[in-house]
Image 1: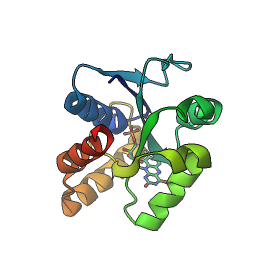
Image 2 (image 1 turned 180 degrees about the vertical axis):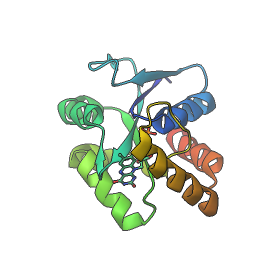
Image 3 (image 1 turned 120 degrees about the vertical axis):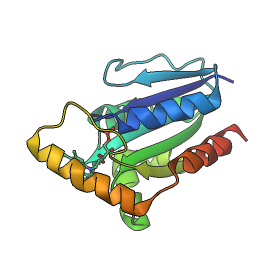
Image 4 (image 1 turned 45 degrees about the vertical axis):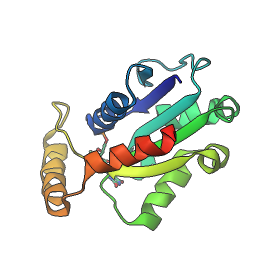
Length: 160
Ligand SMILES: Cc1cc2nc3c(=O)[nH]c(=O)nc-3n(C[C@H](O)[C@H](O)[C@H](O)COP(=O)(O)O)c2cc1C
């Protein structure tokens, strides 16, 4: 079954998670960066994974726009959603999901879950972002979140 993994991020973590998902799904999973491909053809996909980073409470506009304009096409597919963010309080993360995805897309998704933010560092960091990332790196180290296990469970849910 073909899967399209559509994502948009800025500093690399959303892409990193997308690649982890792809490697667990195998050859039939295609990665599509929505920043480069604004109108991807997903007609052959039976499964669609959509991921975004969160910045000031919002998902990337490419993801919000894609889900808004392609909601009816998505309704015919098995969809799974993820956000990469530092927030880990469930109720707050839920608000991010509600803001990022149209109700029709969110309610139909087989699974939606958060993965930790700031797992990888990028050259795009300015000095302020670098300081923020340093703090986030410490937070990640303190939390010791089992990302690999979470990605495996996420993939398991969508392949069931
Ligand atoms: C400018 C900026 C704003 C951010 N705002 C939030 C936020 O509002 N809530 C949150 O939970 N995480 C926030 N984060 C953490 C990001 O969601 C996290 O670094 C994530 O990995 C970004 O995805 P990316 O690496 O694919 O760009 C922010 C990070 C940056 C750099």
